[in-house]
Image 1 (cartoon, one colour):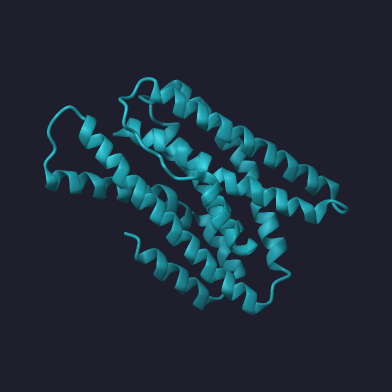
Image 2 (cartoon, one colour; image 1 turned 90 degrees about the vertical axis):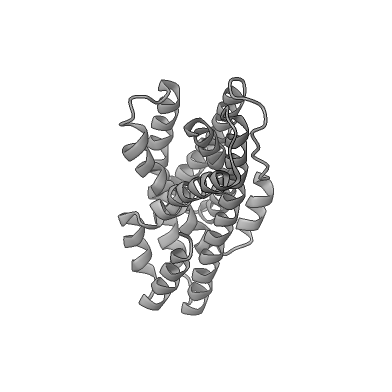
Length: 246
């Protein structure tokens, strides 16, 4: 099960970094004829996200050579990126900071301390963590900069769009949890009854919701930045939406 989850973990990052990179390049336009240090930072950010996508594709290929056939990750990164980028910049940056903070949390709490993990897997995510820690700083700077130019009405709309993006992420997780649970049940080496299959799928989904939604939403720094930009009522709307994803 952990091998399946590890493969999906790499694929999910390859997926989200497609839209993150596109948004970073879009934001760089604001600095073309201004702050050249900011421009250089965003260009380097983009270069590293492209590298990460290539890295995660290689991981998927390597894992596919040793795990049984039948694993599926049918989510189109370009389709997801187009849908995400259809939302406001404020909402996309909120989701991006959430993601890049939880990558650091996962490494420190789960990957680095685990002595039984593949050394190569740990090494890949060590360097991913190091670069994402820099990206999170840039995300925050750009999010706050963008927020400063918004009206209250635009920000309120952006909060709703952030909630919509979180719901869309959950839809992806539900589909992948179903696919991964089905693959596990088919390849685990014994018969799996209907009730157990449902329990396995529920376990995958619970794990994925924690990994890709709640661990970021509950990150202290994300909460600090978010609360500095929104009203109490907007914060309650976000918490209510998150509360439905258990």
